[in-house]
Amino acid sequence: MKGVSFVTIVQNEEKYIGRLLDSVIPRFKEGLLKEIIVIDGVSRDNTVQVCLEKGVTVVSHSFNLHFGDQRNFAISLAHYEWILMLDADEVLEEKFWSILPSLVEQQEFDVYAFPRKNYIDDVFDEKSYPDYQYRLFRRFCRWIYPVHEELVGWRNAKKLDVHIIHAKDTAKLNWCNETLYPLIEKLWKVDTRGS
Image (cartoon, rainbow, N blue to C red):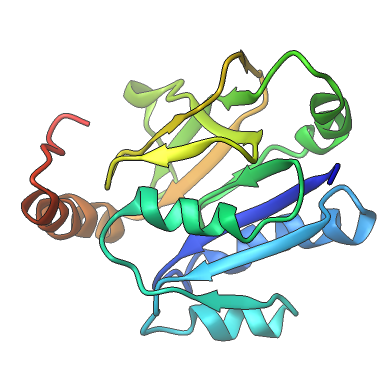
């Protein structure tokens, strides 16, 4: 069906998920987004409660330490031709919403790449910019790799000049780099260093 499904995968994101949902729920009410799908990897904090308080339905799906699999599960539940997928600690610049209809009406591109501005403890990380991310794509695309996933299955991509704002704190960054990614590397026998 024509339209855009918004999907996100979360786990223990109570600190960030509210800001993300506050940015997309109005777009759902306006009809720019046809559905909002939140996949929770069995959070142990108040992530699910925050979503429910905002009127968003959450689907529980155990996280098997493979981000690609979790993202693909989220896509499998979507009903519309286009997928907008953001992480819990990301939001889009406001100007994106005015161009979204024209992006999904065209037939030439299957995916759009957004430059991402990374902030750690509210400090812009200039070294990582522009850090392009595929976040708007046709539903037939899929993700591969357990961490630092790659979107595959598309033919033509276009870079946009609308930014993703990615804000996290040092504690989350350190936990990912020192605990989560080494665990995934060991489990899936992949090298996450330097990614």
